[in-house]
Image (cartoon, rainbow, N blue to C red; front, side, top):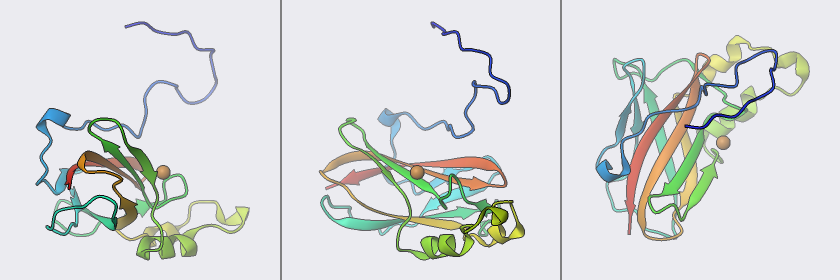
Length: 168
Ligand SMILES: [Cu+2]
């Protein structure tokens, strides 16, 4: 593999990415799977309606973050100013969408927690109140198979859940 020379920069290494995750191969996509294991032994759970997903309809995609005992985690933090980030990608790569929570409980929590002045920027215990769930509004533009990546931050670490969806 070729490498490129980068100028030396004081501070953090340019190698490594704290937001990466290993996902199952697309060929092994399991459209019935609604849980994804997290590094601490907990799970991210896609709280989805069992009814088939339809294209051109907006849904609220809700994901719960659970500890190894199955209880809601208590260490959720804002990640880049948001309770969570979602990426929807068509298995055929024809669709890519990056979505943030909106109009849901997590967004209300965000309004409360978002610092309104720089003095509040320092990390305080207030972020401990962030709920252990994130919801994203999204509508698939066309039928097909999609992969969904959900990222949240907990205790300073980014965690990623990976799911697959079949859309009619
Ligand atoms: Cu984002």
